[in-house]
Length: 162
Image (tube, rainbow, N blue to C red):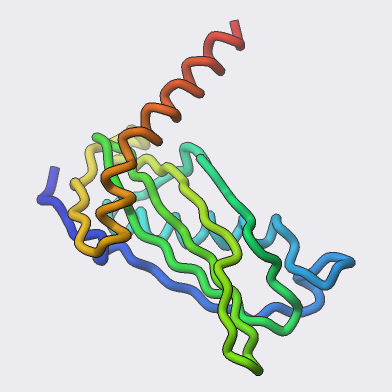
């Protein structure tokens, strides 16, 4: 396994403008399109951290906080917030911007887990992550709790499938 890397090394940003074809009958962005953006940017952040192919292991949470309206810009930011052997927790923050007024809102936050794969498609170790900012440290410090919750959900799923 390679040396630990600062969270900023995986930081990835993406901006797009929302057109009518991206919206529902309320004139707000389809949640599924937001989810696609989140999965895409989180994939890039986890590949930047691991320098490996990755698969989405889980979408742990997605909280929609405010709608994104037609004509607004959507901005996403993602980075690896914590790692465990071959898995990486990725935090994604989604904001919208009214391009006429400059008003910005946090519209969604999400945690996803990705697993790095070796050349044979098997899970492979990833570097640890070094948090540097206050937000990165807060997410890093609370990650073990989210990891245990993921493990518990998986165990409950496994028990219910028998």
